Image (tube, rainbow, N blue to C red; front, side, top):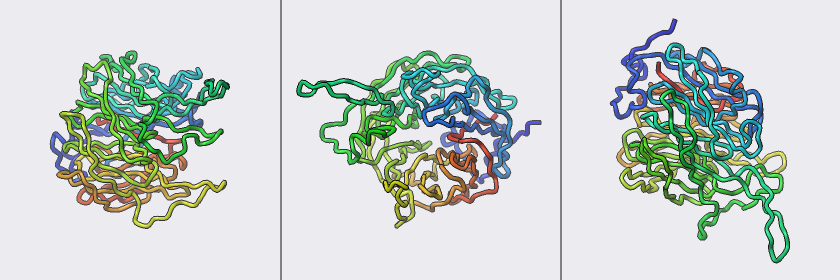
Length: 443
């Protein structure tokens, strides 16, 4: 029998009193049971024919433990799940299939997959798949009106042979696929129509741009420098789409409305070599926060919802002062601490940023947010209790943080102190094969 938790009890469990503005994503849920959706990757980095999909869990709000409810079927067993989102009203779920060869067809790029959520038990019904209009999709978001889905495609991975002539001699170029942002219409049943438009990120950096990374990483490298989307999101007002380019260190901004059919935007250069990755948007103040993949730091930006302009506020370390770099790899190549995901507490008071630490242990940095300035103050750095951290997420009550640990094949749970934002690892740990992403619905 499905348990019911009143909204007052659901929020009271964390000691929070939230306004409609700070709890807007779940304001439609007066009461209900919390369900968690964990997306799994396939064994192959760029996808495989089996082993992927999404597992569904019922969350016990007493301790954050997850009880299995179901899993997706064979129709999506090739789902190399990366980005995921649920709709505000808890009716739909969307995720991307991170591959360069959708359906086993080389050069087809990735996919975006739509599911309907069964409100009786949280299980998923497959609706349809559309090409993501780019290689290696990594981010997906649905707007609050259930009208449009936006997808970000990483690109800069697949190699192609292209012949150029230099000084009259034929030479082989090895270009990579494009980084792109695509927009889709959502049908009444949640299914996705064909892409309405695709924005292709600039293929070349600005002339004055001096990236410290080599243009070519090596003959056998899995990727090389190029424009590379790593996440898409909406600003607080949902008048803008924001996308990160961690290839050329840019942030792209596109005007948006629920009737948008085109993507015509602008970009802003950020710190060279920082590789902006994932976003967390403040629920009520004009700021967003982003992880920097190639250095252990996070940055905050002021965002002007009238113009779509942004201004850097601060960059702050996601590790403790003086933390040494990881030891080199077996072949002697250097390794770095690499921030991955970033999330904001439903109250907007705390930000959580994950650190992937080669050789471990992986950690999460906790920050207090000054909503008047957008500045962060680091509170603590704690271990996740797992290995190979990918994405994290805070449940909508703000009581627990969940960490997807791909290397240790589990999801760990950390309790959040409502007053300080500090994290305490709980005994709750759920075995999931190659967990990548987690999102929630209150039903």
